[in-house]
Amino acid sequence: MGSWWRRSSAIAHHMRSFPKVDLRRTAAQIHQAGSSWSNPFQSDKTLTPRSFPCNKAFLFSVERFKFTVAGKQLDSRHDDDDDEQALDFPGGKVPYTSEMTFISGSFDQRIPCYRVLDDDGELIRDSDFEKVNKELAVKMYSNMVTLQMMDTLFYEAQRQGRISFYITSFGEEAINIASAAALSKDDIVLPQYREPGVLLWRGFTLQEFANQCFGNKGDGGKGRQMPVHYGSRKHNVVTVSSPIATQLPQAAGMAYSLKMDKKDACAVAFIGDGGTSEGDFHAGVNFAAVMEAPIIFVCRNNGWAISTPISEQFRSDGIVVKGPAYGIPSIRVDGTDALAVYGAIHAARNMAISEQRPVLVETLAYRVGHHSTSDDSTKYRPLEEIEYWKIDRNPVKRFRKWVEINGWWSERDEAQLRSSIKKQLLQAIQVAEKTEKPPLTELFADVYDLPPSNLLEQEKQLRETINKYPQDFPSDVSV
Ligand SMILES: Cc1ncc(C[n+]2csc(CCOP(=O)(O)OP(=O)(O)O)c2C)c(N)n1
Ligand SMILES: [Mg+2]
Image (cartoon, rainbow, N blue to C red; front, top):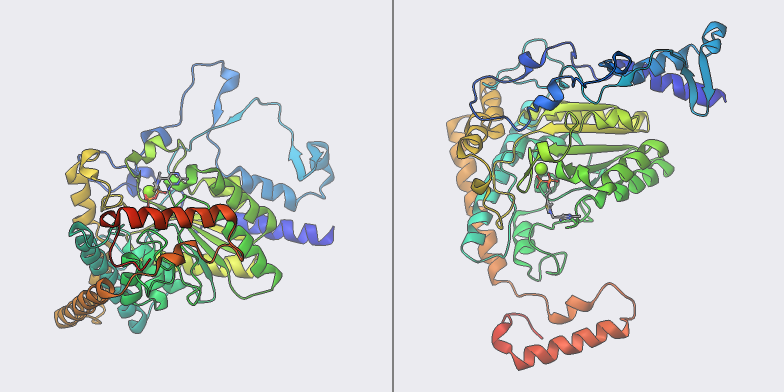
């Protein structure tokens, strides 16, 4: 009972102190002016409290943060007067009211987006941020450029027919690199698929990226996965899985195992806005909340799930508001501001580990590239919108400005970095292309200790088909 009380007080205290961002700012102040198209992150439905044609008694309350009130009740649960006004129910006392009030499904203003750098890359005065020194800043910037260049060259390699598929992270470089920079290498990362920057930061080489995309013998997955399904036991990054959101319940379980082992580490699960429509998102987040597992859920809200805009994905103010519903602290961050992402993930990690609980971070950064090489996004969204995010809200350019303002980067450094990375990438692609493919037997290995009869039958049939139609099968795979 005593520990329950202490824990409840700590949670109540935490809920009151989080998030630190000033929630009183108006939506108009937050919204960046000057665009003629409709911003995918701006939903009128969430800005305007809905009015329903109904009886006065059904007036919708726009009161926010009910959980803060709940926190106060937990604090004062020994007050006798309150006791008479409250329903003593499993889970805690609930105050009575004779007002028939429905909690509104939307807030009177959108949850603000935490940022530290302004649009010109200048530090916003008095901002609350985590310091980044020269060495770290230069490494972060260099990794962001490397990721951008890797995406450009691998994308072209796919267009040339050298690899079968590719996914870029254009527009989301800051989320990739700054989040990785704020973590410890002991933290277990479970990516969706648009976060290769985490592996890059942890030392996965350009050759290893190329080997995976070419599915050659050097690929840790032995060529059995589609390109971009990276993973590395050495770097504590779980292999990307194609079915969306499966990583979330797994991440909650991993975080719980870290808790049981009393490790000074957390799990970090990445998910897209579209991924939050999957049941696994809700199961994973709720499981982590109930088990008080140390985990950071990083939701990359990039406005789109392939061709489905977020307005067709949910009616809430994005993803950040879902955290409190599960009882977990949450923050919305400008995903094009590397310093803000770094600070938020750094703080989230401290909170997840020291308080042994999940934290939700929603980043806002538009998906600048097509969904994948199988997609043409100009078919469903205006070019000006893509260009605006590509040029005016470019996270790499913005961070470069800040690094330059500090006197830590020059044109010469830039030219040297780009020429060196280009050489390394071209070399990696050439080597990966020439490297042998894993033999056919690998396709059937590693899952069962003793392969079941149906798998053996499939292997036999495949060999027979290859013998019959050799022209239809790759010649560089030994059968
Ligand atoms: C369970 C499942 N349903 C559908 C798909 C097909 N699919 C692949 S990616 C994707 C969109 C995901 O969008 P989001 O989570 O927002 O990530 P983003 O691509 O924007 O980074 C969909 C629907 C899938 N891979 N798995
Ligand atoms: Mg998305």
